[in-house]
Image 1 (cartoon, rainbow, N blue to C red):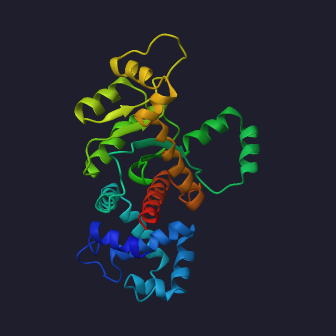
Image 2 (image 1 turned 135 degrees about the vertical axis):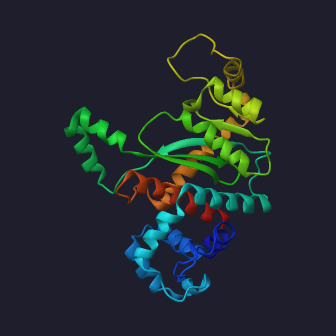
Length: 298
C-alpha cells in the first residue's frame, strides 16, 4: 500500500479538481484500489477491510476509510488511458533507477492472454458451450476480455499494456506495445521477442529501421509450406531460429517470461473480471497490470 501511494504521488496530482472536496487525495485512493485488486474484493468489502485496519490507513496518511462509492468513482477516473500511462511511466523510471530492467541483456517479451468476463463455474461454461451450439460459442468469443502486455523479461515488470474485448488477431497491438515501452525506458537498444501471432514483414521494418530494435518473431504464420518466407527479415528469422543454439543466442528462449507474467496475474489476482460492461472490464485489466507492477517493485 505504501509503495502504491509513493508511486502515485510521482505520477498523479493530489486532487482531481480545484473544487473537489479534498477528503482523500488521488494517491491515497490509488493505494486503496491496489489493495482491493490484490485481495480480490468488492468495493463494499474493501471499505470494510480498510475500516478494520487503521494501521494501513495511517501508513498513507488517511484518518478514515473511503466510502465504497468514492472508491468506485476513483477507479473510473484513475484508469483512463492518460493516467495509466503516467503511472506506468513512474514505475518504469523507478525500475530504471534501481537497475532492475536489464534490457541490455534480457529482451522485451510481448504476448496476449484472455480473461473470463465474469465469475462462473468451469463445468457450467462447458455444459453451456455444448448446449448453445456455434452461435453461443461465437457470442462468448466476442465478449472475452483480452490483455496484451510488453514485459521486461529480466524482472517481470509490465512496461506497456493494451486492453481490448474479443478474440481478434494479435498483430495490430504489436507496434503500439513496443513503441510505448521503447519511449518509457532510458535504454533504447534492446531485443523484442514475440510468438508467431505477431509475424509480419512490416513489423520488422518499423522496429528495426525506425526504432533501431532487434525484432525476433518466428515466420510461421499462415498455412504450412516448405517454401522460404517472403520478405528480407522474415527469411532472416527463419535462418536465425532454425536451431536451438540460434534461438538461445538471439534471446528467443526468454519469450516464455511474458507467459509467466500472465500466469502470475491470473494466479495472484484471479482470471475472472468483476466489470459488467466491456469498458469496465478493460479498466479491470489495466488495474491488474498496475497492481502486478506494484507487487514486483515492492
